[in-house]
Length: 442
Image (cartoon, rainbow, N blue to C red):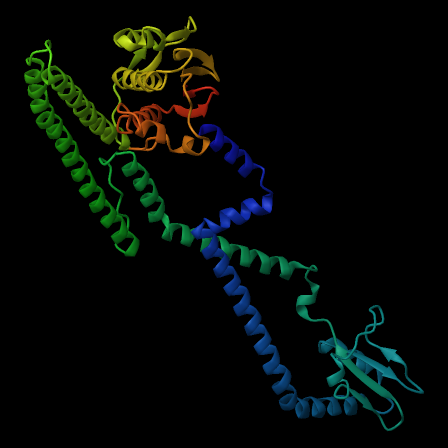
């Protein structure tokens, strides 16, 4: 599982930069809102400018044409015939216009140092040129506006800075507006870890504040339900184990020798009671470990010594081969639950090694900065399609269902829960022959 996650993280790091930005944009509400605001501002600006341009282009010429034509006639009349260059110079200096005179006697322009400019555009050309009685043509054009003395591009940079300032302001406002989402996310992570002591802070009384308050209420209810569940588990453990213990004690007092059906019935009853006891223990333990709030009683544990103890306590494990590397470091583990894991793995290996050529093998070796525990049997193995389901609750292979001692399908599930509770990785593979279960402790 960890290797798969590492490979997935490596593949994510290998994504191209556009893909990473696209992924971040899709998963960031702030970035999408800013993008919407920016596109909306650009669209509104474009629509406004286009509309205003169309409105002025279709309306202002009709309204301004008679005024401009009359003004041009007055200017040409003031210049005289032939046009007076002095008056033209004074007029160009006084007004922001350029003047060019072409004719048989006078050829002059007010701005000879600059390239010739068109008179605004083709649609206003006839407004801004006049022909005098003596054959001179006077052409008016745009002159030097007051703002044209500024450096080129200054207005563009100012506009860009203003847009950037508006974008930064919008981002700051949206970030402040969505800050409760960060608090809700952090609170959900705390509640998921079982830390209910710190509620989500209520910064505002809007919809997000109401959502945070409702999540706090939900977390409080979940905490109460978890406490009630733990109390129920303890009560079940006590109430169910006590009558089973008494029944087993009474069954053991029955006569164990002699002929007839009584001894066989006694052995069958003891076996059934033992299976019920184990089933109740496994159910309670799996319920505790399946919760993300399972508490581990960690202590420094010598795994090699623990494996030897478990094997010595199991009479059927006398022939099990132990390959335990010396000098392995002690690990911070829950001793009782790790004992349960090792015992279940050994019991599973022994169950399917009845007709095997070799007894099961337990190996404990250093691996990948930790310790690798492997329990292998040399039995018939498991079909490849069933490997992925072996650690599911109440799952048994076809071969196990045909055996009277097949169990209820909780042993491997408990082993997986114990490994995951310690942050370890449990893997099951066909060893050909047999089945091998590996647990990597870091």
